[in-house]
Amino acid sequence: MGCRHNYWYSQGAFRCKKCGHVTYKSHRGKSKNTSIILISVIVAVGVIGYFVYQTYGTTQTIPDDTKKVFNNTGSTIQRLYSQSQQSFSNLENSVTLTTNADNRVPIAVYDDCLSNIRGDYENEAMHSIGTTCTHLGEYGAKQFKFNIPAELKQTIQGSVLLSVKTKVYQYGANDFKIGLFDQVGEKNYTVSLWQLP
Image (cartoon, rainbow, N blue to C red; front, side, top):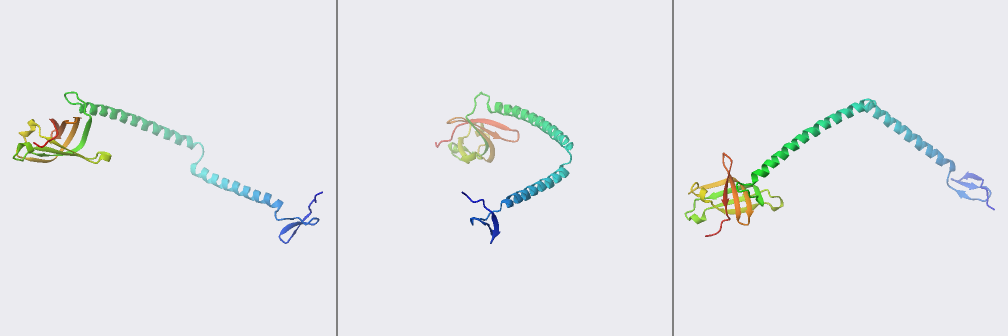
């Protein structure tokens, strides 16, 4: 049968006196190491708990702080709600403003544009409005060249207007309106794309 080992410690290992079996493990060492680690963890949790308790106070102050947070959140939500209602009403106004007097809705609106209006050429066919629209996201900029509308020709005869703030409304491939801004506001003109005579 097997030996009922009778270990004794010799030369850094436990050896059986009867059969000579050798083991390097200590059966009692595991329980000592486990208890040391367990005691260290309990002490660390206790110290951390003490400092957390000192920092945040008693549990009675936590509900008061929570009530303050909820009250502030409620007023913030009400303020955001009223701002969103105002934004929606502004959006409705801006949508109705983009439909012109003839009730057509543009397929594209270019807001951030500047126009150079040339009425100084002797050849009247060369009169044009060069418009550059910027800040179009990934497309960069878009350029248009329009014929000068009849109602604007007399006003700018023989002059050059540079960097006039403009808004372009596109209704079709060659169907445009431009809004030229002056001190009073925006004045809309029906224009078409410029072509060589």
